[in-house]
Figure 1: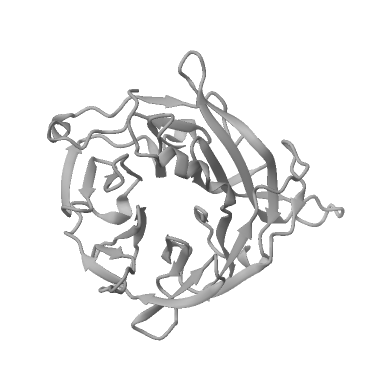
Figure 2: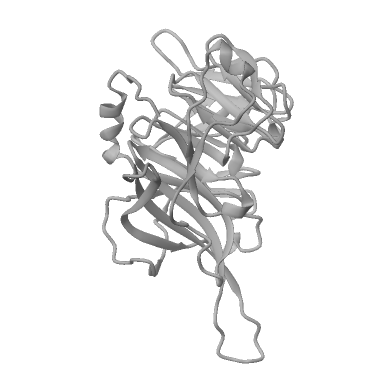
Length: 341
């Protein structure tokens, strides 16, 4: 994989150690709490992490789904809440203050939010928009994007290109790109990216990295070459070369039932695996049925290639495991929503 020049991006992202992980956790029907996890704090664990109580809630919002939460800069936005229109609540994780941001031009139904540099792209079945952040002499504003040439809720994976302006999106039948500056969609081929959910560009690996989208390799990381944005790339009908991690990162224990997982990018060659899973508690009375409980696991890894060029994911710090609120027990849980800010 050829190396690229990134104008100091590596140095900037290497200083991300002051960031924290923020996870949006369901606290009950239509109620979501934002919790802050300090991954720099050491905790004894190893492969058998002690189940802990999660950190206290920083703030709660009423929302229909965690899918309506997005981030831009140091702010977490609750896009579909019961706040007065036409504003949405915005929580700044640095100042711990609440402000107001602009509501969508069209009410979202099943949005997918993609952070692209200092902008936020929202793809939805009814409307696609891009949010420009506030700047000197200019307020926040949503702008219309061309309608997607596919159905957004059928998207299987997506990634931001190394150029910092182009989004690649795959569904079951093809892969498309959107240049957020020219605001034009392009079809790159009748193939799909090998991930599930979001993949991340890493400058030292010079590749996109994410969770494998193949059911036969569930629980593995994979990486692939970054697709060119040049005009010739649209005639390429083959998917990019990919590599699987040597070890399985989750779904390793039969007693654990996998619910959902998200890979969060923490900076150069560092990722955090955020996973929801359930286990059945043992009961002392034989007449009682075992009760399942939902848990949150956080695992951080350093990524590199070995001498053969294979992808390695080395444990960066001990695994942490947390109880999820009891109120979430009977609520449908999908992939976690988490941000590194």
